Image (cartoon, rainbow, N blue to C red; front, side, top):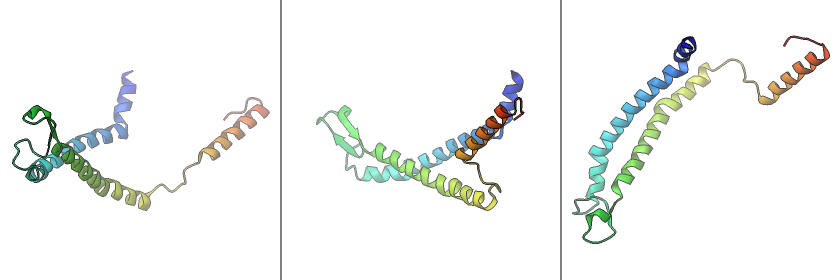
Length: 132
């Protein structure tokens, strides 16, 4: 049981995933600080003189009924910034590197794999106890 757990932890995918989660968390903190320091004050400037920020009041003179639009816009901007940076910093360079140093052999299609299995099974059934 412990050997299987050790093998699981030593796989490259687990380490890569752990690094990605830590870096993603740090990256989100940077983008959130950017939006809290720059984007939120800019959106608040459009909110008028209200202390509540950009949004609208459902019932007059009841602050609890204020619908804040500013945080929704800020979250959407955060998402777009994170998605764009991840694409241009990680995905695009990885795709280019994969094209340059990609695998030499072409991947086998499902049809080719199934054909090979069919042929092996046919040879096995025709030849008695033929090893695969």
